[in-house]
Length: 215
Image (tube, rainbow, N blue to C red; front, top):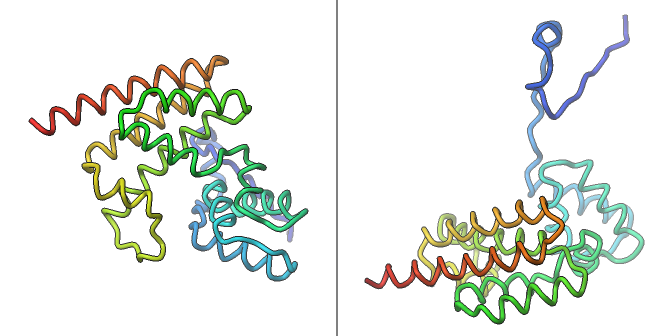
């Protein structure tokens, strides 16, 4: 009588109704990034692991609301001091500055530099899909600077420039287009080709959009 069975799934829509009606359902919510950061900091302090806040922030975002995923990444990284560069290496992410440079290449309509960034990333064996995803996230972060009240100390100077100079509608559009390229890259083996053509289309769209706004 003391035995209880727990049936866990991330796809409740696939459970047959006959099973659902015989179960008591608990819908678990994702853990916020703030709470995940708190959990990670607590573990690091208990285990005497040195860390950078920016590194834990990346882990919290990567975990997407899952404490298990966050702690798993933390465990992999705990072989040394947890720095942002080391976490990016583990997650196969480019340095943040590369993504920022890609964003400004788009805003400056600098096709040659944009292509150079993609080519260099491909040669260095970086995950181009992650590069586009981070670039998309940067534009979304700039939108949050506009929509929410961020403390000055929490603002990245480069992202703040985007927030102040690019119209909101274009920020949203660039976020979506870059994310769509990420999805396309992960469905093909010719990721550099998809990335390059997709990026050039985005720059052309932004250039035309900027001209129309001036009119």
